[in-house]
Length: 147
Ligand SMILES: [Cu+2]
Image (cartoon, rainbow, N blue to C red; front, side):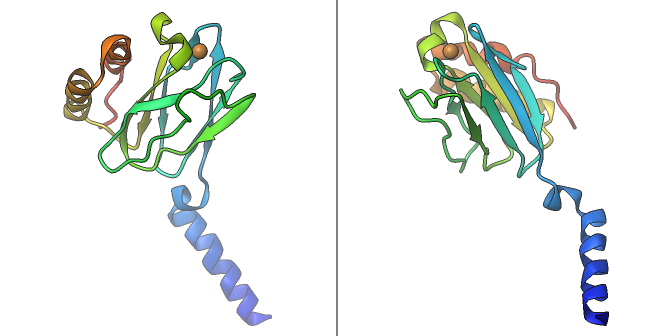
């Protein structure tokens, strides 16, 4: 009994001291017409992003922080919804491949980013994205640095 009490107190203490470790948040992005809303989401490491209304859309990451794993299946529709969990801090740019011509792109900012981080992501996008995929750059320009 006493041991259980001690363990319980330790768990509560950990929850208070490190909320991100215990409570990963789930953020929602809705595909509406040919836009992602909101087009830019700010999340913390470990959080996930649930994409809704994805029957005729997809969301594939094309701008990925170094060491990150691409999310979204190229060329495939995920169906009603799917959840992405970006695995590195930094700026992620993704596109709806069928609607890239309409500028259907979005950004996920994981953790805190500085103006220099935003500038570096823009440089990466300019150097690596081709043709209509460069429309991600327009959204990068709207990121608000968080540190
Ligand atoms: Cu779309």
